[in-house]
Length: 64
Image (cartoon, rainbow, N blue to C red; front, top):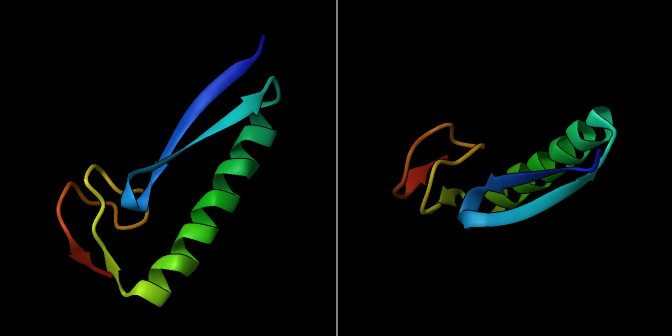
């Protein structure tokens, strides 16, 4: 089974994690989230159009 999982994070960016290993997918997800957090810290602002994994909030710009 080849699982594809859509990962959304700030600024509405979508990444695909591919693989039949759930742990690998989870790790990939964490790496993306970590990279996003670092980006956000530089920006100091999240203007994601949809639910944001980092801010844990819905649409609309939010202070970090």
